Amino acid sequence: FLQHILPHILLSLVVYSTSVYYTTEFATAVTVNITCLLAKTAFFSAIFQHLPRSSDVKIVDLMQIKSITCASLVLFLQSVIANSGCPPPRRGGRDKQLWKLGSRNDAKMRFIAWLHIMVKYGIPAFGISIDVLYIIIGALHDFKIYVF
Image (tube, rainbow, N blue to C red; front, side, top):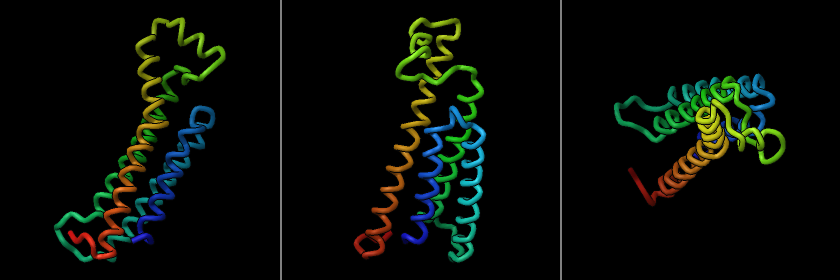
């Protein structure tokens, strides 16, 4: 079970780590995210070649859907934030004064700030919690405690 899950989790952590530096190194973050998406796709296609053919939904199917959806969502939202023209909110300095004063784009800036929070904390928290759930279910299945 871990031979299939561990690489997926490591690639997910790499995708989530781009949320730290995408505001300053956007091209690097996009390159890393696309590379991780390609690696995940190749990884899951290699797994599916060795699985028996069935119409039932498997845990690996759900993991692939979640994994590629979260990575694509991170990439899309980072692109929206980087191309919005609004600076991401910071704790101090000139940007904090700009956010307090408001502007004509006050609603847009608040929406971009919300997106920034979702990219930095929301999506990684959701993805990691689902990964932990997959690990628990996989461990229970491997030890024959829970069979589905």
